[in-house]
Amino acid sequence: MMKRKDQVVWKALEEKGLLLDLNRGTCFEVNTLGLTLWKLLDGKKTAEKLILSASRGLAMPPERIRKDVCAFLNDLKRHKLVKIV
Image 1: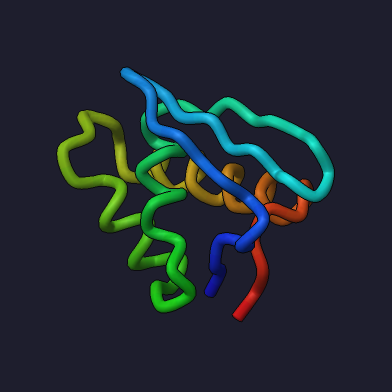
Image 2: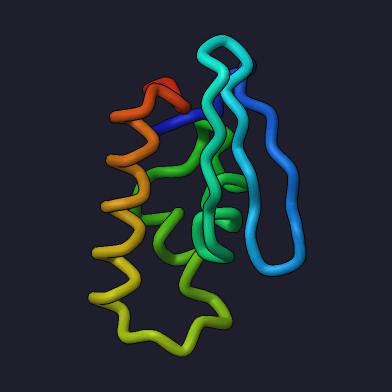
C-alpha cells in the first residue's frame, strides 16, 4: 500500500493535475487517471482496490487499466512522491 508524501502538494486542473515535490522542487503533470489514483493514495488501499476504483467510469479494457495503474504507481515510487506503508 502507498501513501502520498506530505511534502508533495497537488492541484487539480480541468483534465489533469499537477504534483509538486516541495523538498526537491520538481513538478509532475498527471492525466485524469493519474489524478484519480493520486487522490486515492491514502495508505489504506491495495493496488487491486486502486485498480477497481480507478476503472469505474472508464471505457478501457481492464488489462489496459491494470497496466497503466501499475506503471503510474511505479513512476510515483521512482520519483519518491509516495511512501510504502
